[in-house]
Image (cartoon, rainbow, N blue to C red; front, side, top):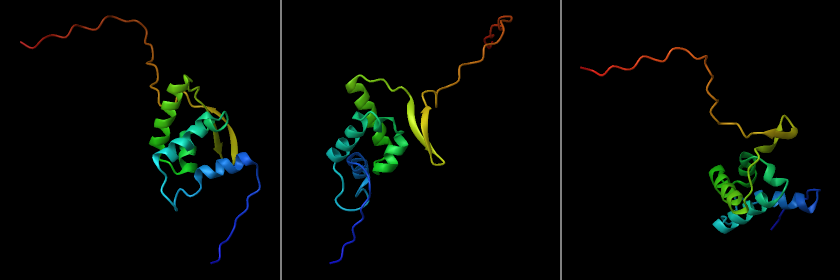
Length: 124
């Protein structure tokens, strides 16, 4: 039997990050405990926890809804507050982005005070 080996240069930390996504499409299916362990390691890490839910889901092969659910549980259990700061990569550049207001409704525009609206009349 011939097997090929791929060797990547990097640190032990790089290897651990890589391992979170390894074998997600083949081999034994991950158990719920496997998924929970992977996500707990990610959310407990100062740097990895700054990655977006999308990036974590894409890298690990875990559905985004599962990533979000586990993140919410982790934040509730640890008493942490989600700052909205995320590490994002666009066009090969990685930087911090504040995503705290994404999806929030805009505050209503204030209009100058005017006459009170007429009372609605009831049908006869």
